[in-house]
Length: 107
Image 1 (cartoon, rainbow, N blue to C red):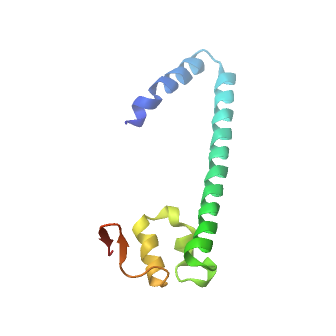
Image 2: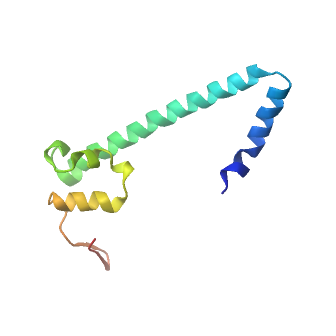
Image 3: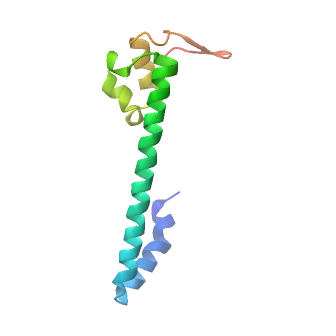
């Protein structure tokens, strides 16, 4: 969906409040948005941390710090899934060929 279409009604309301000199409403709205962004960022960090803990316990069975490309592992969300799989294969955490049901994953 086009972001301009989604946000058009909101931007129109903001423009209306600005034109009548109602900056307090804009300030309150910006304050609300910043609070939401902070909450979403906290949740993202929690999910990232939970995933890394799970990865260490269940897949790696040891600390990430002992592996090659640990920075890419810790920032897995900046890359695609294939990159993480490739790094785990390079570190011999995953076999070179993984069987997934009836398909083989060989990237």
